Length: 254
Image 1 (tube, rainbow, N blue to C red):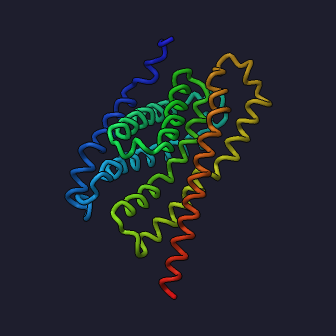
Image 2 (tube, helix red, strand yellow):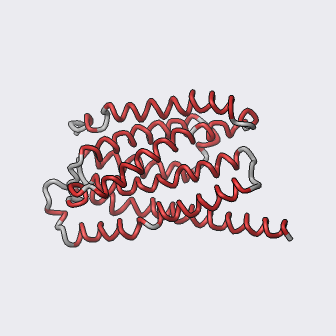
Image 3 (cartoon, rainbow, N blue to C red):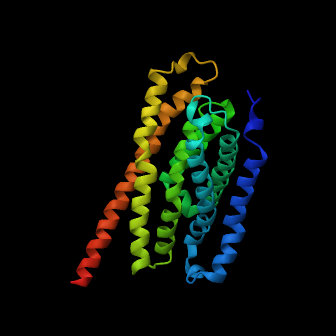
């Protein structure tokens, strides 16, 4: 049962785990206390602020690698088996990141209350873990990690909110860019993902392929809708918040 654990607990996993914990517990607190005005007055929101550095670095790495895999003819041409070593390394790094980020959430009483974060981390962590463990359908999991490209913009918006810097052009840029990038990176990829899933189940005879683990196939088919529903719900909240912000600005101008 545990024969493939070496595919999970690799050097890349530990690099992702340790670097994320260091960012959240040491690097971000030190740098923010020195250079970010208002950080020392955040109180219970400091822990959430401190997770943003690690998540931004992770998002940029996995987003770029995900785009590369989409252009790699070997990986793109064989979505079922995805023999790319780069894809495996990226997912191992992501597994370490998701593990560490969830540890940081559990350590903070305030962040533990966010049920959406629990659901998001559960789907992300288990999707990466089962795909790596069974060496199956890695392409589909990595494709969805392109979603992370929106994370730096979400982080900028949340940081400004925590610091109560909710006026001016920077906040307007953060609000608008977060909503646009969230839509482009998380909602736009959905139809193509589900088209490929349909093709895999309907035409590729995935159930009789000895190299495709059925647990992973059913996991991606059944659990990823939860992930998509979360993203649709969050985008709707962003859209309403942005419209509300614009309406307040127009009233002030009047």
